[in-house]
Every structure is written in C-alpha cells, then in structure tokens.
Amino acid sequence: MRAIRFLAVASSLILVSAAWGDTFQKGMEAYSTLDYDTALAIWQPLAEAGDAESQFSLGMMYGNGFGVMMDDALAIKGYGQGAEQGHPKALFNLAVMYQNGWGVPQDEEHATSLYVSAADGGEAEAMLALGRHFAMDFSEAYDPVQAYKWYSLATVLSAMDAMGKRDAIAAHMTAEQVAEGTALVDTWSTANGALLAAD
Image: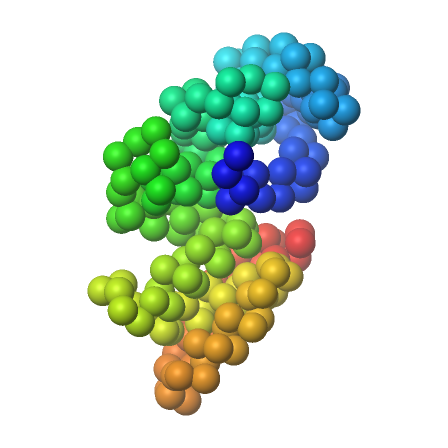
C-alpha cells in the first residue's frame, strides 16, 4: 500500500456532489464499514454517469487495493476522469502517479502542472508538494520565493508541517525575497479567498 496515495481519504470522501449526493453517501457509509463490494457497486454507475467524487473514489480503491486488486490503470482512469472535472484531490493523486511513474511514464513536468491545478483548487497536500518541489536547492526548479508561497498557503490551510517548512525556507531567503513571496500569497489569497474561507 502506498501511503502517499490515500492522504486525507476520509476528509475528501465526505465532500458529496450535489447531483448524486444521497446515493454517493450510501457508498461512503458502506466504504466506512469496509463493505467495499457495496461501495463499488454504488460508485461505479455514478462514476460512469459523470460524478467526479465517485470517479475519484474508484481511483482510490483501485490505487490502494481497497476491496479490489490494485490496478494502476483503473486508478489513473478514475483520477483522470475526476481531474478533467477539476476535482482537486483527483488532480493531486494523478500528479502523484505521474511523479512516481505508477502506471504511466514518469513525468515530473506534467506532475507539477497537475499539482498547481490541485493547489489552485484548494488542495493543501498539493501546496506542500509544490513547496517541496521549489525548495530543493539542488534542483533546476529551485525557487525559494515559490516555495515560500506554497508553504505559506498550506500553512493557512493547516497542513501538517507546513509552517515549519515555510520558516525553514525563509531562513535562507533575503528580506526582498520574503516580501516577494508574501505578495504572491496575498495575490493568490485575494483571487481564491472562498477556498481559504471554506477550510
């Protein structure tokens, strides 16, 4: 089981889509009691009908082997369908698949793009991933200002260890860089205030 691939499962699965909410919730109740067969039977037709939450949930089941054989292709299918509809956690998990080359060719650039989309949807784990991406001083992608931005936003959303990581990168930045990073945080927060308020 790949721990990184089922971060915050419970918090995500309770975000019920309006169109199929009641039926999805029945699947969630089954899932919560480890009745995976029932959850699968409920979510499969919902996913086929276009419910992003069910598509993501099926991706989680197949990506981790919850009640089914682990199948990266089916996980990617579910995550991909959810990602096409802008589901933040589907975007995040699809990014993880591309970053690690699980079921797809490893593609760091595409993974980063997906992380950005997930982060712009309010996914704190994606913000942390972007912070790590830009904080690696041995990497061509090293950008402490961007790292500071994403760690700061993850801190606002109470992501674990985000504040410590932000402070660690800030310790190696100039005052001008910190000011630039803070300005980026303010710009993002102004444009996406509803996401921060919903946390």
